Every structure is written in C-alpha cells, then in structure tokens.
Length: 250
Image 1 (cartoon, one colour):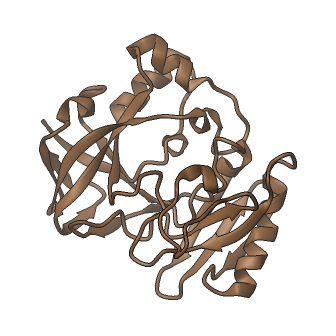
Image 2: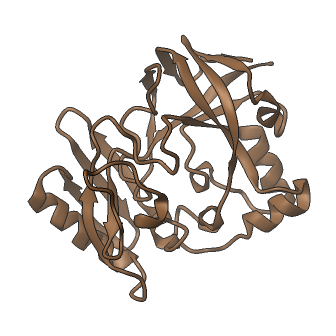
C-alpha cells in the first residue's frame, strides 16, 4: 500500500492542546517530538517517587472533561514556551518548567475542569519520557479514510483532533491500518514498526471546536466494526524526517 502524510500533530501538554506541524524529525526509540512533554496531575494523583511515568488516571484528561478537547496550542520548543487558546479562555503563553508559569497554567485550566473532581494541582515533566497513555515510546498513526468512513456512518464531519493522533495518512483503504500490526512501514525517511491497535475512550466524543460532548463515537465504532479500535501505535526503529506530503509505504 502507498499513501502520503496528510497531517502531523503534537500535544505538548497531555490532554491540553493540539498543534499541527509541517514537518518533524522522528528518532529511533523515542516518542513523537515535543508530544506530551508535560502533564497536569490532579490533587488526588498518586505519582511515583522518584518521579516517573504514571497512568493517565493521575492526570487531567479529556475523558473527564470534554472542555479540554477544545484547547489548541502553539509552541516554541527552543524557549520551552507554549501558547494555549480556547473559546472560553484568554489566549496565554506559559513556560511550564518555570514554577510561576506552571501555577498560572493550572489557574488557566481550572475553569475547564469539573468542580466535582480533584482539582488541577501540579505540572510534571519526566526527562526523556513522554507522558502518553502508555509507558512505551510509541507514535500514533491514523487514517483519513477511516475517519471519513466513520464520519459518513455517523452523519457528522469528525475532526481528526478528536483522536489525538500524531501522523495522519491519506491513501489507505478504510481501516487498512489495523491490518499492519507487526509490519514495518516507511514514512518519509523514517521506518516504524506497527505494534498495536489504539483502543478509544469517551474523549473522542467531544468536539475540538467547542469542547462539547456531541457524538457517541464508541457506539458508532462498536456498531460498525464490533470494537473500539481506531488507529495504531507504532515504534520508530530507524530515525528520519517526515513532512506533509511525504510518501508512506507499507
């Protein structure tokens, strides 16, 4: 199968903002660059000591607050600065590694988090470890054809940002990516091994433009395919560059 890169996306703060890119450098054995570099732990979180990767239940996440899904991001990687926007919040810039800015970031997020849940409490970063939902350094790959087919079934134009993917591929048949488990694929000049399907959660039901839960994507996936899988996880096994329009060969 041959195809091309349609979108490249990263999420510097876990569950708090998506950012589209023209290109990226993938490194063998590493997650997508600048993706889930930070996460915001809530007040009831039980984090390891010394600090290390922790399961998603310890952090703010779109499953618990659809409003978070409407955050967009622009980042300056050299300065370690992010700028967050949301339809209900003022656009502001933060350097999450700075304690004062981390406190401001928590204050900015608080109105988007349910009052009946433990409040946002701490911005964390683990050097060399992406704070993704899995501890392994995997990259998420999705298909625009799969998204289009699911959209048609649901009668709703679904945004790719519902699914928080890193690489979106155009040109595959719908759900063909689920047949690539165990195979190597070339994207740009990088080589990745597809390792597992991505099981989806309720966060995908929120509209990234509004932060409102407006679709039952899980029920649609179950009805159409008998499972909740959408997209695949892959491991970078040879470093390389990827850019919009680059070829994808499986």
